[in-house]
Length: 331
Image 1: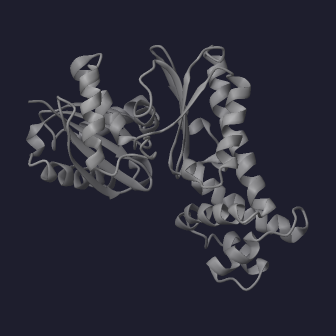
Image 2: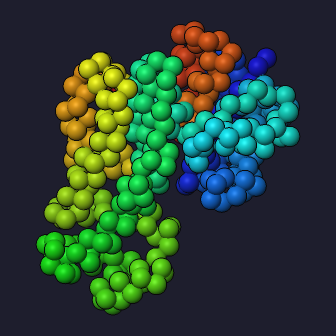
Image 3: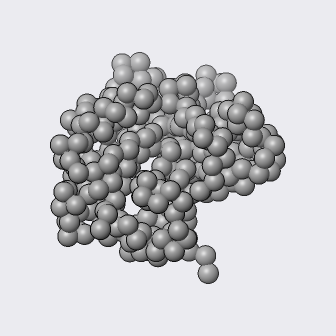
């Protein structure tokens, strides 16, 4: 029996699941987030092993049972990095064929099987990819820091408070919320914290929650931030789709990542509106499953090439025992 290990590692968490060659999902594990390029290879591998061992234990299997290991890992932006991670994991899964790709690739494969498609993945950072048959382009470092997912939204929220204080923007509920969050007595004190780099990356990643709550409460500044951000990030995807010649086709476009769980739905509508303006035949798909399922799909493809429909159905059916669905079940 072949057993597939699927891995999804991002900045906020590491997921691992085990499946057999019939598509049955047998175990799942979770560990801390990591990126080999910023946190160190040992730290990133440690999170992968912790999540994988949990999944293996649940499935009553050992590392030696894994015959295929596929990972979608943040920070794989260059070819040598995939090889680096595959080599680092080899001592722990010596019998497994290994394939490590950028994490947005497995998120895309968790949502669509089409070979002509695109994905916009907004989580703690931002990434997107476009596939045109065999040719696949993942953005990686091409996207500037000011649009890098939750972290950039947090920074925009802080800047909005300063802009409001200067009179560049209307008064906003963000001012009181951020002063309370940082226990600052004034906007000047909040500015001092930023200038002295006392606001951490973890703080910035938390602030989109406040931004979401204020937008839902009708705060105009917060609403405009979400809408402008949605419009802008969609442009990264559509520009590449145009360059790869598929804007006139009926392609799947996947929206994935924690930012797309935002309850202020005008954000998602801004993204969709801009995509459809440039790719009018696009089928916009909100990811049904967590990206780690896409790693299993890639693993099954290594075994079968074209995955039999009954294996797909088994995978979907057995996924119900794990927290893998992102969308509610349809009746």
